[in-house]
Length: 87
Image (tube, helix red, strand yellow):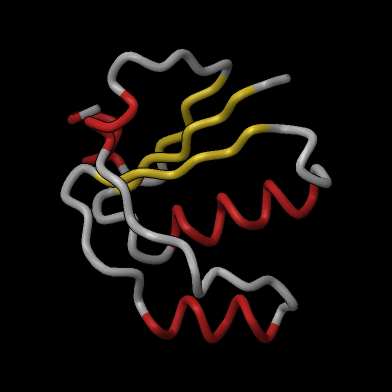
């Protein structure tokens, strides 16, 4: 099974949404994770917008890229230049 890590600065909205979309679009046939350089709580508007699209991220929690330091991924997607430079 392919493994993907999506990295952004805070893991509070964009990467959480991208993780959920990829998981949804691949029917969970791909392991998808998201993380942030400096994690913050998931933004309530991200939860609201995703719920309007039929995807529930209300139970997600934010993660630091450090949690995945020893893991292997087929793809690492960075959503911001700062995240790419620091990861």
